[in-house]
Image 1 (cartoon, one colour):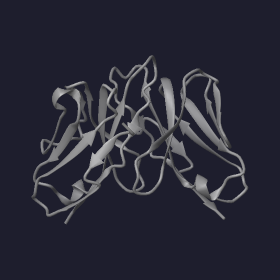
Image 2 (cartoon, each protein chain N blue to C red; image 1 turned 60 degrees about the horizontal axis):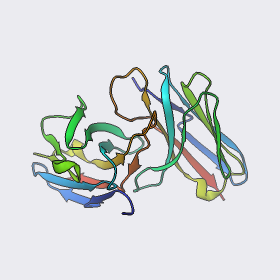
Image 3 (cartoon, chains in turn green, cyan; image 1 turned 90 degrees about the vertical axis):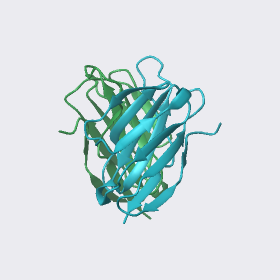
Image 4 (cartoon, chains in turn green, brown; image 1 turned 180 degrees about the vertical axis):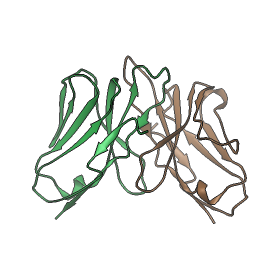
Length: 113
Length: 115
């Protein structure tokens, strides 16, 4: 069973369009991180959300943490080809009793010029 | 210190051979993680160190895998008697946990191909 479910798994859009991807769980998290990964490279940290309901913006990227701290979303406005990549959410569940950082399978985003 | 570094970037080995990978974390980070990633999947947790202590190891990790972090600095991941199923990207990450956050910073990974 995957602790963090990301949807959609794959998304292809035209340059200039908006998109939203989701990260969902039945567990509560103290925080969630979003990473972007390009082929052959390691994931790069984009943002951490900590407080339920929190919204963080990173240029054209908007990240939201659910009120119950079980889910998160990433919205990209006016997508550019440089936004292409695998977006990964990750976190430590509060009740897990361990300190591993669990990852979802990712949202593969392709922005077509 | 510019980040987490991994060596080698690529490794091709014959089935049955042993391989060892190295990870140098960000110097002030006390936590170090190893992950494995296959095509189309997210990183899969393998093991985790706090300083030199290996605090957790995935049940998915067979006895052929071993990791060390002597002196709480760099870490090595060894795979003995490699199998074709071991082919994957091996990622190392480090963090310095403050409060509720576990922000991990990744290296570029070691791509292992077992032929």
